[in-house]
Length: 122
Image (cartoon, rainbow, N blue to C red; front, side, top):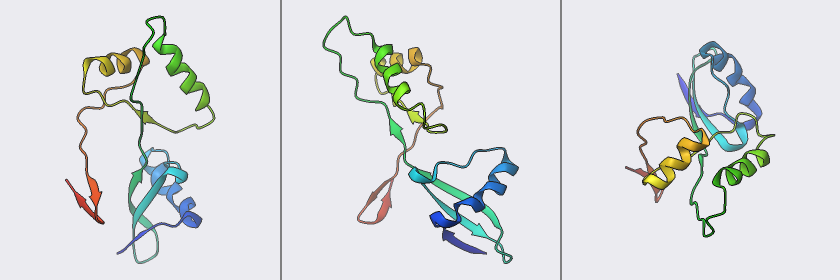
């Protein structure tokens, strides 16, 4: 097995493995892919690292502001970015309500790993 980061020029090679799994290929502009290739050069495994956009903070100082209009404004600006996902992390009731009203899907627990001095820290 050969393990490597797949360069942008070879991103097209991810199509077959992702199609077999019924999953879309993440956007190359905001992702990187570590691949395992067999001795014939076929990709037999891939692990993606994707930039995760998140919705926060929310600051409203005027009670007449309609939060969903803010969200819809954001959605309109992202309309041409098909396949792009963004997240809403909810540590409090306010953002949990924003996520619920805004149509976000609950994904369960999140875990974080931060790179410090070139070494991932958990």
